Image (cartoon, rainbow, N blue to C red; front, top):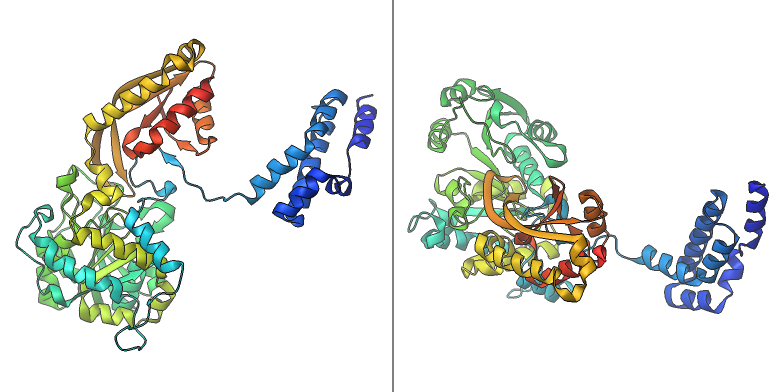
Amino acid sequence: MKRAANHDLFRDLPSVDELLRTAEVNALAVSHGATAVKDATRAVLAHLREEVSSGLLDAPALRLALGGIGQAIEQQVRRTLAYSLRSVINATGVILHTNLGRAPLADEALEHIRATAGMYSNLEFQLETGARGKRDIHVDRLFKRLFTDVATDDLSGAEGKSPASSHDISTIVVNNNAAAVLLALNTLADGGEVIVSRGELVEIGGSFRIPDVMAKSGAVLREVGTTNRTRIVDYEKAINDRTRLLLRVHRSNFEITGFTEQPSTAELVALAHRRSIPLMEDLGSGALVDLQNFGVAGETSVLDSLRAEIDVVTYSGDKLLGGPQAGLISGHAELASRMRSNSLFRALRVDKLIYAALEATLLAYIKRDYQSIPTLKIMQLTKDEIGTRAAALAGRVSESAYGSTLSSRLRVEVIDGESVIGGGAAPSSVLLTRVLATTCEGLSADELAVRLRAWDPPIIARVEEGRVLIDLRTVFPEQDQLIADALHRIAA
């Protein structure tokens, strides 16, 4: 009987052509294109057939669905043609959230991208001579100035002391730090050995492993020491006529504590100079200022490494630097010149969008305008500042205008919490914050988190101990009301 009933209902479904001839659907085709509307129509009809087949739709329900089929097709068209990459509200408290795009760009960076990418630019053109130019001069000049001038800034951590031969330091830009490591290793150590401590053979997000990258580069890994203890003598004993490079790697998202030992930077530099072997450091995150002034301790800056006379430093553009995704290689000009001559450099280089964003970010550093760089500004927010915003938002959520039913269903409490840097930077550092601990009657914490993610714009929070935690450190102030509205409507 059920199959027969379903069969009768199938006959009530219109064909694709019948729907395309209706005025409502035809108007959609004019606005959005015939192909997209036809595909959406097929998708809506397939969904109705599936619901009829499964017994979810009886005759009255099907008539109701068919009455709104034009609207359903329009919604399907909009979903199909909508961008997949969307802006979201990061309420996790993770500042450099890799899954959420890491560092948000400064307004000046966005304006510079628009000004140079929306039309032609002098990306590789010398305006003075009319000859072909090189694209990395736009940022290399700024890095040279930073490595000379930033040392005199109070935020640098070493006032008045510039890196040795800072005018001889050059910087290369590639598409990410993994590419920077690959290019440097291939240029400096292809076919030779690279000495690295066993305690630094890290794997970070996306299965990026130092040994794998080294193998791809053509260099041969030479492990020294143990996981927890490596001494300078271990490096010295491992040096032979095939040694091309000494490598130090930032451990990124973990730490080794307890019974540990590793050689100082000064010891490694002295050994490298004594044996005439370049010393390279993969910093990973790569801050350009002393982060202790931003509440983060124990994170070496690029300037620290260059000042210590490390030959080559690799780091990311979209982490602690606060710019676009890029891999940066700063080091002696002669070594940088060799890397630029490597055919890999052309394969790994970045486009005009990255140069525009990076140039604007570096100019903010030169101007000492750290508040214009969102990553640094977010890190500087105090617990009291965030707490004031959190209390105000909690007050908006519980306002009587939202209704007594809502106030009884939704519970929002402001409690102490911790934000983290993320992105593999400063894994042991936390920033004190105040968070909104939220529950809603009739919904589990996971269900509430799902509904927040389904909101427009999506709100990404974290779930702990049966509550949804919303950390406003990583929420822009103009987004506070959007969160209040979302909580109100979900609870209502």
